[in-house]
Length: 335
Image 1 (cartoon, rainbow, N blue to C red):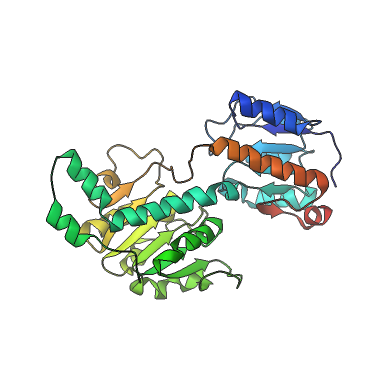
Image 2: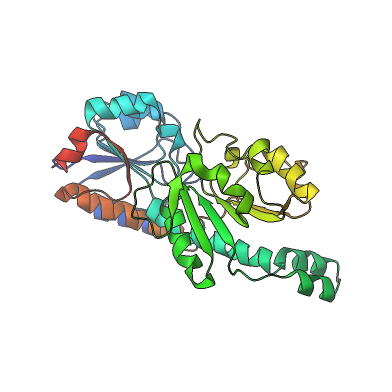
């Protein structure tokens, strides 16, 4: 069990009421603000000597080199669900040698991301993006839109990356009586839907009506949905990406949608972000884009802080931390 008081480095810019709550709730620990706060809870912080100066806990998006070089750091709590920049051999070595724990904020973002995916599935089925476009032109496209609207019913849905967000999405999809199949690197066997290893995906693609990509960014997932894999999709299928932009070949995707092989695509993530104004994705008919807003919601920062404080209470009392993603065996045994 850790000893107290400690110093908590934070790069997360909270509004004054939430910052004051953090300071009060952290007592007797001291909050050490980063020299330069994050631009957002997704942006990595710059290197900061303050983090290397006897801080035991880091909140936000610390520079990976600071984690590796800090002699006192014991726990890093990320203000994002993604953690690609921290999943490196160098950080894993530091974790192993010094007993560092890294947690993320998956439980903050599973609900908004799952609702966002459901909302876009319904919007595409009911042709809402097309209706919005018609409204901008004052066009009453009654017969075509009505005839081409569909129901979410009896389709086969593949969720690729069945983690925390995918688990919640499975629950939201249950009333629609869909055939949902999950894919993850290592199925656990306790999933609510049939789940297969991700290397089995290709044999299911030709029969899938909807493919939902929730893959994280990593060396193994870069361009995972390549031109070859997109060609395996069932003609007329739908594709959603709320994972990371570099997990699909964007040019190949635009081509597949333009040809009609993929009927519609919804992207909440792109490469780069923001997407350049002249990028082909903006102007490809039947590709719908939201600017990485799937995880956003009113009260997001308050929920981020609540999640951290819940974990801080667990850390102080030696309970297992929520959303553990990386830790050493020694750290696990100390909690």
